[in-house]
Length: 295
Image (cartoon, rainbow, N blue to C red; front, side, top):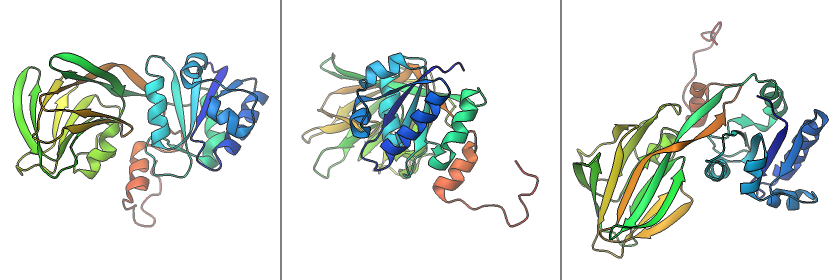
C-alpha cells in the first residue's frame, strides 16, 4: 500500500482517544504522511480544523478508527463507496472489529505502512424497506438487520421468502439477518453460529421462536431475502447495525441482499481470528508446555 494521507476518526467520548490520536498523528507526520482529523476529533484535541466524515473518507488513503465496534461500523457505512482500508484501534471495549490494542498501535502501523499486513474484504448487506410496494428506506450495513416486536409482548409473524420461494413464517420475538462479520454480534447472543468473517453468506436467526424447530439457517451469498411483517400491534422495529432504527407496520416488506460494496478491514498483524475469538470469548488455552513450536 502506498499510504500518503491518513484520516483519523475517534469516539471522542473515550477519554484517551484524542491523546492517542495526536500521538499517532505526530508519528505519521514524522514519516511524511499527511493526517486529517474528523471534525469532532479535531475540536476535542485542539486541532485547527477537521473534515466531516464523508469528506474524510474521500480524501484519505486509509482510515484509522479509535474506539469500539460501534465507531467502526459507522465508519464502514460512510466509506462503503470508497475502496479504502480501515484500521481499528481498540480503546478498551469488547470489540471484534477494532483488532489492534493501544499498546500495539505504533508497531502495527509500522507494519501497515510498509505493506506487511493483510486486508480482509468484509461482506455487506443492502436492506430496503417498502410499504404498499413503495420504497421507504434503503441502507447498506456491515453487521446485521434486526426485526423486533413492538412495545407489547405479543410475537410478530414474519413471512420469509428466499429467492422468490416461500421458506416459512417465523412466529417469534424477532429475526436477525446477519453477515459473517455480524455473526459475533447479536446473532451470537441469540444462539447463532460463529462464521469466519471473510466468508460470503447470509445468516437467518429467529429470536425466541414459538416453534422450537425454527433454527438458524445459513443461506448462500446470492440469496435475496424478503420479509413481510404481519403484526396486530402498533408495528415493529427494524434496526441496522444496532445504530439506525425504523418503525415498520403490518404488511411492510424488508428486502435484504448482498451489497456490491465491501468493507476493507486491516487485520491485526499480531494475532489471527482464532486468537481473537479465544480472547473475546474467554475460551481455554493449551495446557502448559503444549504450545511450544505452535504459531
